[in-house]
Image (cartoon, rainbow, N blue to C red):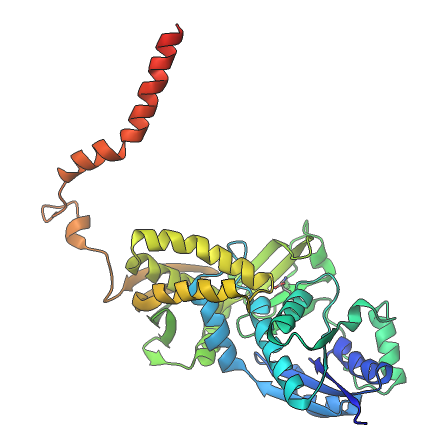
Length: 405
Ligand code: ARG
């Protein structure tokens, strides 16, 4: 009988390295590691060799950077999805794509089980497991970190040494870091005390705004149907555009966030994020929407943005509601085309100008000069009717007070 196969979401870090060996022993199974590359990371060097040395039967590594930005991050951008109004959700947006890859490889390789290295109190276990159940309900799911015997990092290191599992013995960063092109999440260490300011060494990507260049920098972003396509008049692929903006924004100290956030499992956590490109692009995109969307669509979309953000954060990317709301979002993006000029300066972004062929701004209607074409007299009737409910309310209230006297 062929051996059982388990597909493992693999980063090459300590947890998933130990997991490969531990699963193959415990379940007498062939382990297939699955790694989706969502951004530049040093961990990639020699990753395949490392997986095989650790005991994997096969190692799949796929560069998903363009797909991640085009089909995942830019969807969230079009939706204006920022969790609790601020967090651009690099981690939360990356997980559904990693889940898709994991499930595709598991099915192609004939694995009946998939495993991930998320802990029992984070959001990522939710995103993995709801995603897997939505895409491939027949697969068994294992989350060893929730039940294996290791109680600490040190115990995992002992196990790795005992079993010749290659692990990096560099000085461990005091932080836990999750990184992709859309942003970086930094947790643990001293950051666990929300009463303490994040030390400078927590930030990985951005210059401290205080020491950022004294010269501001202007950038021109061109958006087509809600999708950023050009920067400073040059076409870029989606991933290259984001990489370039991370570099420029990072230099000017843009995109730092220190947040208290509500996790899916009910606890509050303190999170430090850096996401220069995401913050710049959300600002530019929103600015353009203000110019081109009619009042009711613009207002309604704010509620939808919030709802979409909650769905993404809560691991419901593959839900029917997400799909339906995204259909609404896409229909709103038909006129979100134009140019936005921003100025970056010491952690701040200022909008300098915005233009669009679909602009609903009309100077003759808005002006206070003699060129004004707005029909001021029409407001007479409009206000008589628009104010009528409140006039009636007060009239009735006053007459009741009179009667009671
Ligand atoms: N709290 C953020 C989120 O849930 C970031 C999580 C970082 N993930 C990680 N595995 N370190 O989206």
